[in-house]
Length: 433
Image (cartoon, rainbow, N blue to C red; front, side, top):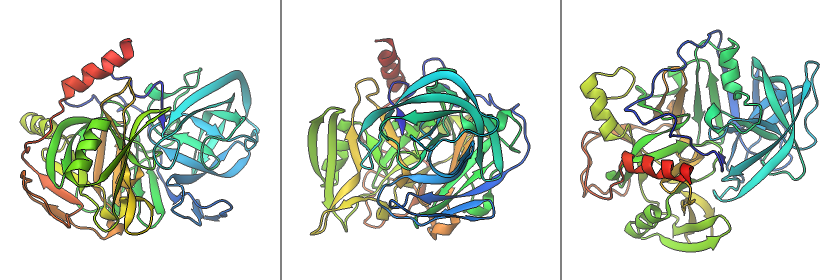
């Protein structure tokens, strides 16, 4: 999910080839692995296996959950969200722990992409407490929101893993993972998500677990947690350069600007339906279920990869790699008669006209390392998925019906072009007016 009124505060951070390692001095301690579950149908039961949580799962809701203890509320199915920053427990589920203290403050958080189709906005309000939050073997003192009123968030609540830039609580509380870092609970200030295609996954806190992925990470700098520049690839051909991407595990789809998505649908013969909604103009796509397109993101953007090579950066990969959305993740809904709704949709919010919000269909089959210490993200194919890594240089005519999931690239191709400075100007303008 994405906070709607504090989506990305880029102006204060500046746009550099890569960000500085601002968190490098954070204390270090231990690490932990936590099994994640894809949200089950209502009534699914959680069981415990050591310090891991395992649950019966289904495809119905499109969100990822982990088992958290918040105060004396045990085994809560909390949504893992790299697009927001606060910890909120749904109405009636928070039981204060022995160390709980009311802050005598209320909150009202606004969220977008709240529905499984990537649409929806809403607000969550309630009261703030300080309490203990535990995930696996790791715990931290944390500001927690106890929600009231109507349930907006799926499951039992939400834990945001984005940065302080998008935190919404009025006391400026750090996000949960920042608290783990600040309180010396992790050996390294980084976490990894390995989300499988079989509705299970693992979150790694405090280390890079190379046993979970193939080869080396492809790394790029983040502007803030977890947004960066990438190139957009259609059928393994770069069609847009230096687009702004936000990795959001709390979004069940992939959403891009309306004009770009319409162009993609036209190029791939996907039927587009444009609607005017309360959230703005939206585009939904319908395609033959057995003919998904090949769409992905080339990381780092080739301009950033070139700069990294020239400066001999040890943090940013010197070669770009295309990470495609897996073909078996394209179906948001099967409508029958070989007609399916695409997981890609178009939605342009006036304040943020150029942003791609990349949700869990992209995460599936990948290991994604979120490194606060180096201000980078790193991606690799997860070992458990059985996919292969191929290499090659895309050309304007490189269209294949069965494309590999990951392709190494070295040269930009012609096509639509969106450049980082223009994106920055759009964001700065949106914040000024």
